[in-house]
Length: 243
Picture 1 (cartoon, rainbow, N blue to C red):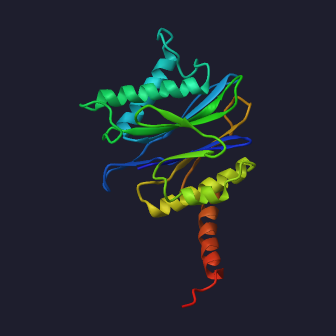
Picture 2: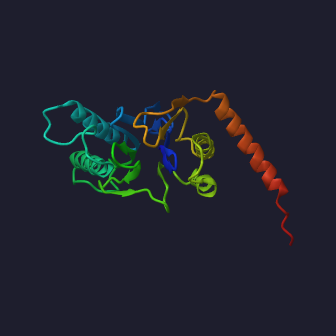
Picture 3: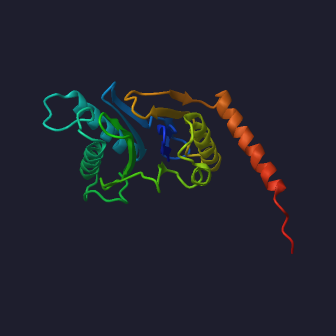
C-alpha cells in the first residue's frame, strides 16, 4: 500500500509520499514514489504514484524514456504546452500500460491498476494539480478540492480537512502533512518511512525545497510525539458523558 498527497496553497504546491511497498508481511521493500521532471525557467512537473508497482514503474519509465527520445513523434513531459495536456498524456500512458498488462483489457478493479497525482507549472500558466485514475481519465484540484490523496487515504484525511488553509506557509503545510502521515503510519503498517517531501513555489519554475524524512529525523519525531500528547490532552479536556 501507499500514501501520497498533493496539496495546493496560495504560495504553490506541496507534495509528500511514503516509500513502502509490500506483497505480504514478509516481502516489504522501499521504492521512490515521487518523480520529477524539470527545465529551470520553463517548467516543473511532479508525479506521485500508487498501486501496482510494476504498473507505476512502467508508466514512469515510459514517460522518462520518451522525454529523452528526440525522434518520438509525440509531446514529452518536457514539451507539453500545458499542464492539462501533460495530464492527458500521462493518462494515455497509464491506459496503455494497463491495457498491455491485463489479459482482458484495462479495468479499474484490475490487479494491475494504479493511480497518480500530477502537479506543477509550465511557463505562461498557473500551477495546476490533477489526480489521474487507472482508466486514464483525471480531475483537477480547485477551490472546493484543494488537495488529492492516493493509496491509504482514510487515516490521514481528517486532519487535512480540518486544518487546511490556502494561506498556509510551506512550513505550516509540511507540519500538517507530517501529522497526516504520522496518523496513517500508526494505523496501517503497509505505509512506512522514509517520506519524500517537495515544495514548489508559484512562478519560480524551479524545484524548491526537497527532503527525504527518515524515522530518526528530529522534526518528524517532535511532530509525532507532540501530536500524540496533544490528542491525549484534548481528549481529557472534553466534558465527560452524563448518563
